Image 1 (spheres, helix red, strand yellow):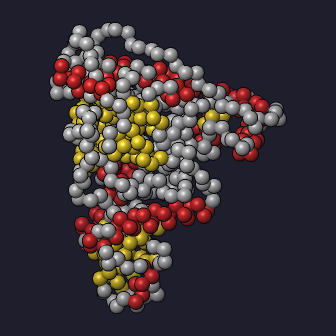
Image 2: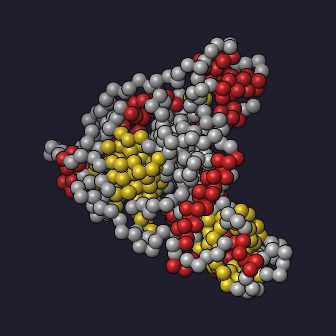
Image 3: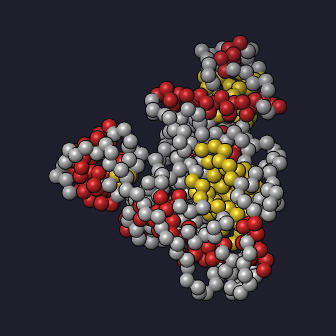
Length: 525
């Protein structure tokens, strides 16, 4: 069993191995047997640890009672301010940031209180047992909520249940709403997908001669909810639909976004990957120096003075055992120490700024989505900051402006499934998720789903700002009144990224004005 398989075995059980734990297992005469003993014993524990340490493994293999063995606490970091030096060479806001000024920095954002409301988050609300009935319930919930959205459309008020199709005459035009259970291409080049609702199943046929309809059919993914307009073909053992159009739940054409009363701004970042040799610490400190008002002319400092929130959309640390050969690029090979280092860096952010921290797939949380917030016993230092810890995804109101924060792991599945998407343009996959009104529409891919009491990945409420990361490429556009932002990264190209052909855009920070909804972009790399 190689290291990657071993680490993945524990990740599949919602746990992470420390490097010392990995070494302890390697020293066992029968490693595979030792691994199974450890996993079986941990599953029997009332409180399953998220982090598996060498000490815990040793106790289990020696037969010592480990029921109350705690995960080590992270010591709170002390304040660590950057040394005075050259001003950040930060590309441009409207122009290049000049040398530091000697004008005393007076942040306007310090004159009013933060207004943060966590509107939806799985943290503390995960009650699933992972049984078949739980999966049935979560998919039923997905269908019911998204079909309601489709039925609110004027052109889908008259959608009929699939089970009623047998009662229609041949070539009758009908509309149905269902979940895509299968999709295939015939030998003749046509596309057929099966859709089902709570009471019936029907095959929907798209013929290759209809170019625009074939383009739409190529964007259909299994397990999503769609509306289909088509002609009934009866007379067979089961009716079929000859598709005329495919409709997604999508966002309303217009969206009136909320505005803050105070002159507040939010800086959006993600994918720091602290602990990696490729983490651009100098670039990150340049960004923090700007937040502190230590660089820029009067106009640029005025923008910094209005930053009230720093929103981090996951991958605060690089983690351990996440991708092949990661150990070759780790500067800190202990995930607890990675969080300690991240907390010390974030402690330099001015106190008047509230930091919203959500996890990503590199963070020490369960791999299944929705993911709860990073736990205090793993990253205690982050809790000592002026921070609000949330899960992934999370809906958060900042000064009455609604943010949907999602790290973006499902982009891997979407890019692999849908033509026209790639890793160099980060906003098109985000827009596809908004159109499908679901953050991870593909089940059974790289994005593992936890069957909760409801589907936390449905985009039921229209956000003002949709903020993601994961792809490591900055992007911004507005879609139907929603600001779609991918905040890039603070990490250089890794071995894994190079294999995927990813060219990251590090050190680019979008700043959203919560009153005007104007976005300004700062280049720090």
